[in-house]
Length: 151
Image (cartoon, rainbow, N blue to C red; front, side, top):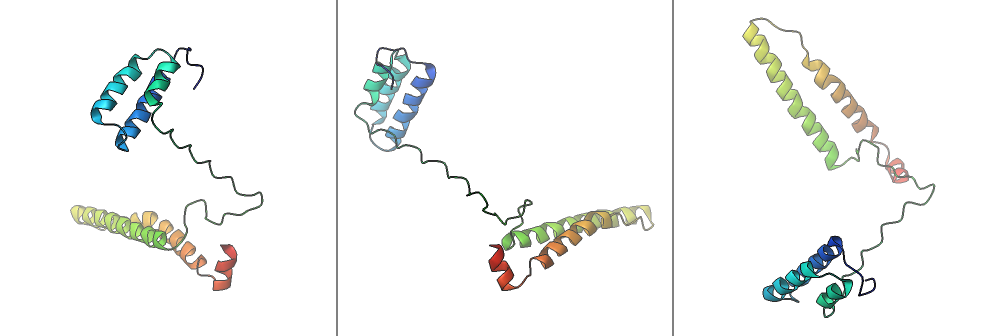
């Protein structure tokens, strides 16, 4: 903390209040002690008054450093669309099938209601989507050596 005689800001009081709440959650303060210290934290005018409220408590652990970016030249092989095979491939096909059932049901209901067969517009919804899924699924089925090389 800065010099004890300097005035504290609202953000400083809020930070101490958060720390007190964490210490109470950890079992280092009783509810009564927490309430008393919290009231004093919001009434504090200087850094010294705030420091006195947490002097007998362990300092909060430092945040772990952010992960370093990948080394230059490293290639991440997950496609931009998030397609990585496995369960997500099954989920994509499941979503396609549910959508296909819905649009076909709407088309059939519309055709029955109008007493004639309407233009098959669902093909424009499920056709291209299914073609892309099929191409991705078949494209992922390379040899084992090819898969190991890509990962």
